[in-house]
Length: 258
Image 1 (cartoon, helix red, strand yellow):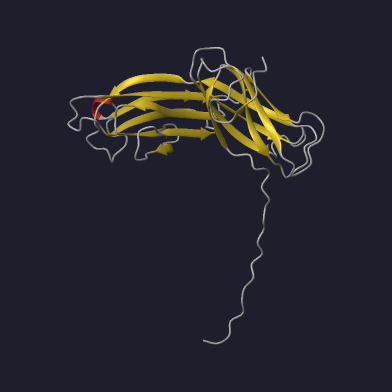
Image 2 (cartoon, helix red, strand yellow):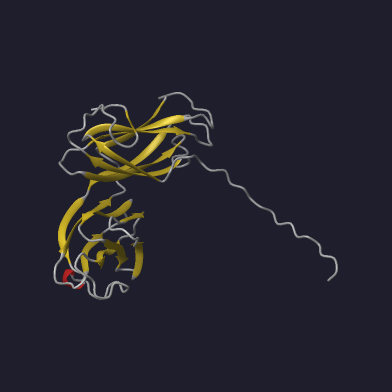
């Protein structure tokens, strides 16, 4: 009982650098196209927009068979497709910008996806929802050996006699500057006052038949502040029949720049 003196703690409020989201996915783009991220607002005045672009990198795809895991609540005890776990090993000899693994399709009711850092002996990513189209995306992965594990948590045939099939894509996105993608803003040139909306155009020219591509960029207000707008990862699904000036997918398409 008795009187109490209220305590007042100082609270630091940090304004967001921008409303740029960390991840964007665009569907049904053409191999040579531009997608637009609209109505971005930055806390800093843009005097000379700059972007460091990584990717786009095509996915390496695997279509495989997998059987019911007899111990679905335990990951890493089988590590063979016959015992319910399919494993792909990837070695990063140097740190990267992204490590992506994505299940595109399957006949199984419930697959789970894991990425195990075998060098550090830690689980780098777990994607284990109630559906099968799982997705792992690791930003700035360390140089290490990674095990990408697909687990048949719930199979079409729970007896384990008949397999399911699945298609998995993996991609290692290096930090090296992009050779097939460029990022600009609209309006181009001049100054964009702080808080004034602008658009970011991501233009790409993809030179092979892959359908899934991964990359991204880090943007800044000028070369002296190359990161103060933020980072965005970009996923593309390419439909070669989509016209380059079309708008059939997610986002806004403004035509090819090549």
